[in-house]
Length: 313
Ligand code: PMV
Image 1 (cartoon, rainbow, N blue to C red):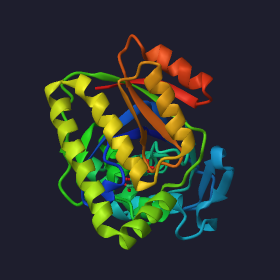
Image 2: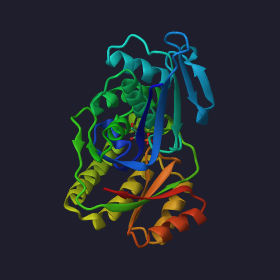
Image 3: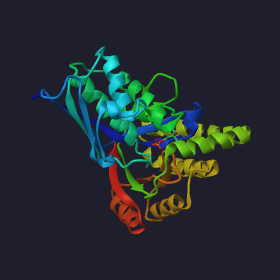
Image 4: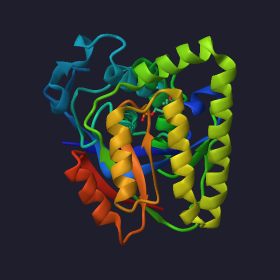
C-alpha cells in the first residue's frame, strides 16, 4: 500500500522578531534536531475521498469533513490539493507527529503545515517548490497568528538560514562559520498572536516611540547579518543582548525569561535573548562549544525545560 512521509524542522529567530511584522528585517534559522512529520497511507477499502486524520499530540482523531472549514490541518490539505490541481484526496489515513513544543516560539504550527503539505503533494504524485509550500503554510499561519510576517513558514519551508523582509524576495543567508546555541524553554506557553496584538496596540498608541525601537532592532539585524557572513561570530553575543533589551522595552519579555537569560550569561554565554513571540517560550544563548554543557546544565538547574544544544550552519 503506497505510503508517503515528509518532515519539516523547527526554527528560531536569531534577531528581529516583532519588528519584522512592521517591514523590518529579521534573521531566522532552522533547528533540524526538532521535527514535525506527516505520514500518509492510502486506504483502498475506505469510501472514495475519505481522509482520516490522526494527531495524537492534540488528541485529534477525525475525518477531514468533520473539521471546521478553517481548521489549520484541513486548510493545508485543501490548499495543497488545489495547488496541484486535484479535486479530492484519494482515501487515506494521515498521521501527524511533532517533537516541536507548541506556543513556544519554535514554529510548531508552520512546521506541521509544511510537513503536511509536502506529504499531501507527494501522495497526489506531485512535488511543490519550497516557495509554494511556504505560501500554503503562510495562509494557515494567518489562522494561528492573525498578522504573521511570514518568517516562520519561509525559513521552515526553505530549511536554511534566511535574512527576511516581509513581502520581499527570500534572501538565503550564508553562514561563514558555524556557531553554537543553547535553546531553552521557559516552560511558559505563550501564543504569538497575543504578544503581536499587544505590540500592535501599543504601537498604535505611541507610534513614534515604537518605530524608534523597531529602527534600533533593524540596525542590530543588519550588523548581525554582516558578522554572520564574515564569520565574526564572537560579535553576535553583544548584539543578542542589545536585541533583548529592546524586546524588553517592547514589553514582550517576562520575569522568567529575564531570569533564565541572566542565568545563561552568568554561566558563560556570550549573549542571550528570547526568540519568537516572547512572554514565555524559548530563549537562545550564544555559547562557545566548550561552555555549552555548562550553560545548558545551569539553565536546567534554574528550571528551564527542553534544553537543546544546536549548531547553526
Ligand atoms: O513565536 P513565533 O516563533 O511564531 O515567532 C513570531 C515572530 C514574530 O515576529 C513575533 C511574529 C511574526 O509573525 O513574525
